[in-house]
Image (cartoon, rainbow, N blue to C red; front, top):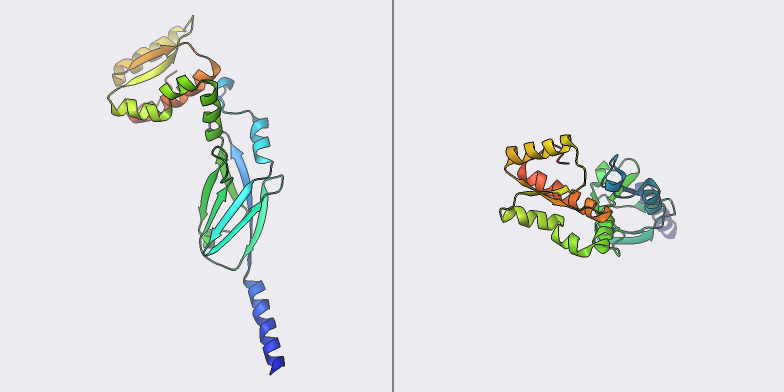
Length: 212
């Protein structure tokens, strides 16, 4: 009898091993803004690489199971699971600027899970620290409120010698969409904040062209 129980235990253990699925994940950061005009780019390549290649805190929730671990210094992690339910993954839950949540259908998991995180939260935070008053006045949330309150305005760069081409583009946009440009003397932080404000306002107004 003891022999039969022992054999059954081995079979169950082996079946459990064979039913396990190994899951590999990789955290990757990417630029929220890529532009030939360097001042607009959210962060340089080196910063994005440094954000990716570090230890990231991972929390995996599946069924009633919670697994907490850290990635290696290349952003990789590996787990094994016996469940076949959807997987919820929280990356850097402790950080307000480097965090992101993901959900994957278990049956769709085939290769390495790429957990791609935008650098936008960090970029916005940097600019809000660099110029908090201007950020509060022209944040993306403020753009939505401005539009809701009937304010149809785009932010323009107040430069000493604007090109005739740029001024003509602005005039055409003002006439076509019944909006006005508010020209502001720029700094690096202001330019990035203004760009994000304009992107939201453009979408709400329905402008699908470059406004600078």
